[in-house]
Image (tube, rainbow, N blue to C red; front, side, top):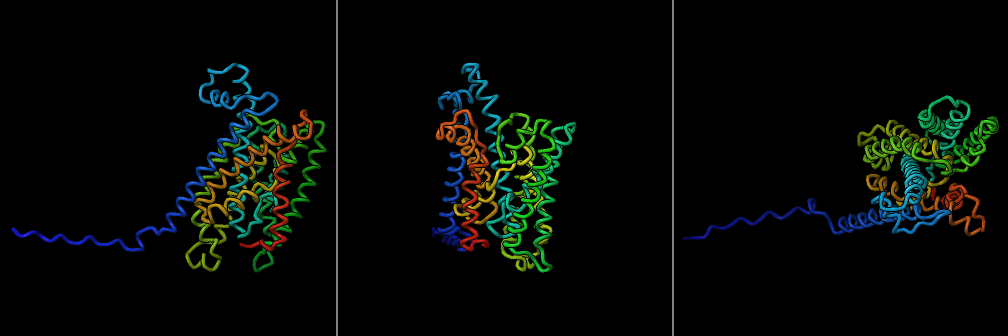
Length: 362
């Protein structure tokens, strides 16, 4: 009985098989995501264990896994004092970092930071006015007002930098710095006029900090953080096309101006909610995307989540350093430094280097 010849399998086309470089890039990105998650988890445990009363990290993990297995005092410190502050800090860092990613995609420049481009300033003025001049307003109004203020700030800066044919990164940065200065003066005026209403704490809010946050602030900012992240990921593909340039993007059928507006609106939503609960924390939206872009590249589909993780970790580490490390270093244990001081100390020189090194464009 003759054997039947089996047909040779059709070889896979090179176009259908991932290249070795693609596999290496995927593996590298997977490792970076895992490391970012580990960095964030470590930052959370350290934040929960550090303070005027140190708690061993093993006890912190035990309290998180089984609240009833630790002493009542540890339960209160971990779950009612430090955990809400850490959660708010992580969400604020995530929001500011993703906001920076979206703004950098809009202006196609590493200088696209909510603090530099007037977004945070607009949000701060609106939040200050609602919080201090409208005390009868419910707490939920502040993030909404901050979003409107942030979007208004972004649009004003863009309008100032527009010369009829387009905008340049230099004009955007200069317009943003000028508007931030002017709005900052107005915000300070609102604060000064409201000192009798207990606005002394608000002076610390102007620098950026997590002094009085708790579970109410977490529940306030969490929906905005979730919505902003989902919207940012939905715009990731369009942001990738926009990064190719206006002419190429239009040739591929992308509505460039609508995409820019939607990305700016998402950035305003994220930055506004962060400012509403934590104040004017500077340069997180500049520093984190700068690092993330060098780790995972410019694909917004991976750049956005990695920046969110790194932003959350950065702010947790910075807040712990400002709350515990810096006071111990300076011998001022009774003083808590605003986290915005540390982010400005790191992000400010980076901003100057980007300008000095003529790296204002991609």
